Length: 128
Image (cartoon, rainbow, N blue to C red; front, top):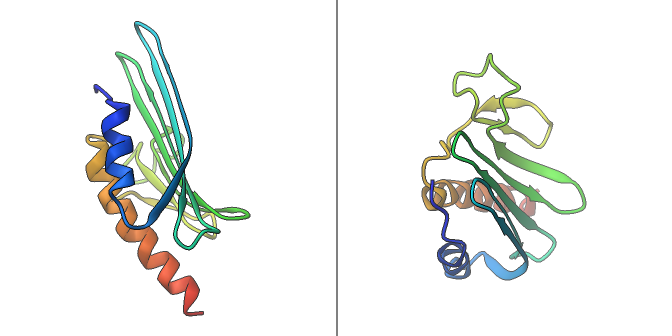
């Protein structure tokens, strides 16, 4: 999968929930790319960390929402083979592992889905 980090950054900036891009890291070699973006969200005590490792054999991703602690995470580390969407899975706020609604095939599509879930999660947390 080809990753255009500038395109992803522009996409993130266009989202109303993203208030600031805090950190951008990219390390590309001939056979591997490692990318990390950290965004501050609205409300400001929430952050989203996005990581990808791209090799000819694999595309590994992690999308993690956190504040003072880990809240939600979607990733495809292959360590839960019993999940129906293996290797894609979701860690909820209680660290329960569930099937994933993202596929890792298209970053912007995944992020569209994730932002909807994050907004619903934050709205629910704010109304408690």
